[in-house]
Image 1 (cartoon, rainbow, N blue to C red):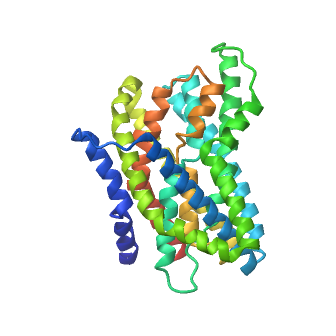
Image 2: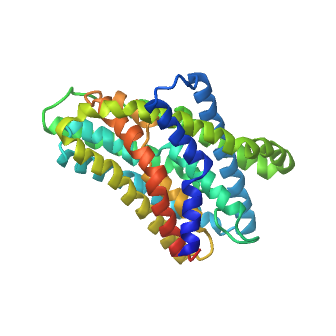
Image 3: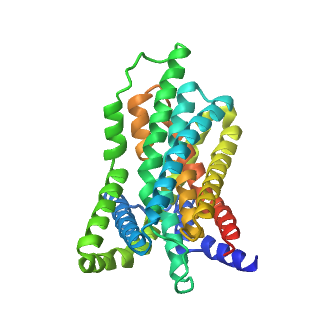
Length: 354
């Protein structure tokens, strides 16, 4: 257990996490430090591209080493779809009982069923670091798990939108709106984060298959800069989270219930993801490491603040974004990277005996 706690403390005091705290502190002390929006976008582009390329390369390498890994990838992809659909549905119903309006509850369901690109980026950085210090030949993080981003993200958004519109119609609330499936799918798939990740993944697969030496040279750039860019990205995220805290007062008397949901449900979703991946690994032993389960937990327990707000604005305009965005950015994201990450890691390490 001492080894696990040592690793957990190392993760808690990792530079990227400390930079996030620096962002929060920057807002609290009212420093004039600012991250230009263009730089923030550039960092997000870099991180999503790096994650996609690495995922594609890792998938090819895993399949070459053990062709049976394709079966594992398909099974975990199905698990991601199930998680996205069920998490969106359950979250919406829990939040409805917690006092949110029907529109706000289903909008939040879409946010909490979908994937947070920032949460994923931090998890990949920590998982990659764990693999680098592992014993030679041991599997800690296969690297292909981020490829499952769209398998969880899009089904979650569609579930929240379809059931949300049905609930509003049943209650006689909101506008009679036709669900514009094509527009929603376009927003979900071609939004910056998902689109970059999918395309980078495909490029990583093709380049690793047909031009491995060029791919290796290209990845030197992305590997070398990944952690530094991630640290600055977390500084920006900390500042954004700090600014969003004041917006929580709009939730009113139900704030304490919302805080419990924003902290607790992602923890449960992440643990469900860890257990799901562990179950697959029991069926097909040795195909995944504890950090694969940890990254899947980050997929499952994250809360989207990129694709979901856009999709929900299109499909459920009755929802109030000043409720869901502060929940995602000021509550869930900080709690995930500071607390839930440590819990998911402890459980994953314990299950794998690492």
